[in-house]
Length: 68
Figure (cartoon, rainbow, N blue to C red):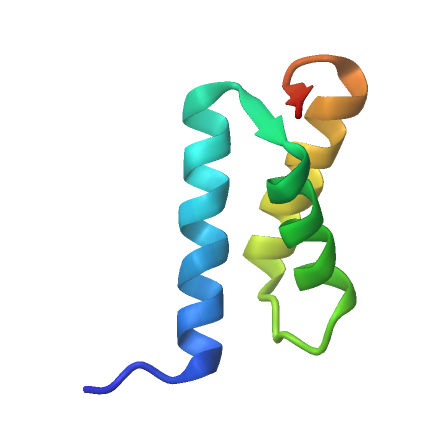
């Protein structure tokens, strides 16, 4: 089964979220990637949206470190 661009973008979001949570830090580039995913025409699932919002919340509360 071939991967569609939609499926690929969702897979990339999931992998990105897992990487950020395992490292405990978020680069500015990763932050921009997630922001673009939320604000663009990607079909971000409810679960992906929750995960991304969790990361943004963790940055605000200091649980995740934002690095350059």
